[in-house]
Image 1 (cartoon, helix red, strand yellow):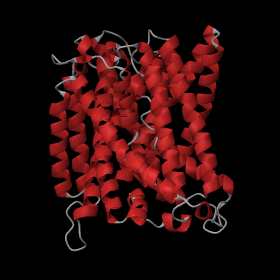
Image 2 (image 1 turned 30 degrees about the vertical axis):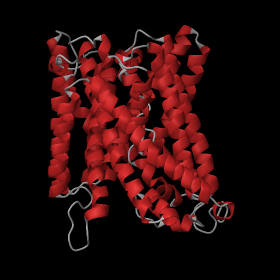
Image 3 (image 1 turned 135 degrees about the vertical axis):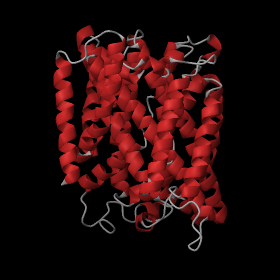
Image 4 (image 1 turned 120 degrees about the horizontal axis):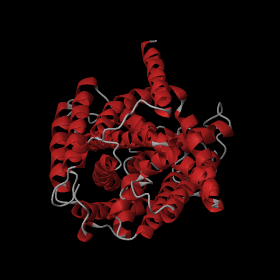
Length: 469
């Protein structure tokens, strides 16, 4: 593998942009309707408080690990390996990589679905929900254009990501300023507890439903950690994670809560997504639709680039840990993992074809991608808890413990059936693990690995029976 040269290192600004760019994608533009459909303003306030607290502890866990465990610079899965063995580390790496690839396909789908808002008519559907033949062909062109861009080097891609991150923040801040000025307390408190619009739902269930939504919009918080080996200063990784989280938390809370003070919950719940466009259109006219529509496209393009970088980095450094076959470790003169990039984009292309044939949607893809990444998140928190106890580091133990509680909550929120389904996607990764072990002359079906593999096989069989049933 090629070593990272000094001019290919990332500073605090680039790392922070990577965090914000990977977190903020399409979800923020649908928050007003998504949340209003299931919760009252009071429940949303409580839900954001819990989610924000949980994510802050997860971010603090990442920061603490970056500072206290500098020898682990192999991203999210490095912590899983250090705490629970190389097979668990591999599955964390595999899950993260596959999640990033699927997330990218979902971004391509939403880009062309948004274009459908502007160009489709009932008589002439061009883009549909982003799964028409035209959408698939244009998305394929986009995939391989980004492929060529990333081949020019991580630094070049990071600069463009920083530009798109700023560009996506402009329409969001315009939205926040406009809705803040149009905010009316009487509208916000019209159905403060949901008794009028959600009579069958109590406050606790509203809070739970809110958190199911808010969990997904924070995927990507670990962006700086994944590329920590490319950071100019190790301390910048933790700073970028905390700063990126606070920026996105502020945006999410303002977009969701302020909208409830402009349009009643009952009206918000019936809007078509991206609902933020319709909220802004309600205040300033048709130009609002264009501001948010174009902002969404720029935002998702930036998120696609961010996740392309994250998807490339994970298997690439997995080779260094002897968990992925050596073919994933080849890089070009710019330090770009060219083989990983090619394999990742080939998978994206394959899933795009499937989406076109089977009619897959953004929501389905993003749901699977989000659930795949919950396991790596949990193992980071559990490792921090374990390492904190072993080292007598009370602060790490506290952050890791609270983040672990939140991680288990995320798994519960995802639902047992969906977690069973993800086991079907984890199982094929074993082939890559076995190849890597054989390349290094190591045995793989030994010790605790046997029970992990047998357990995964059992979960996969259970998932198959659920599908057939």
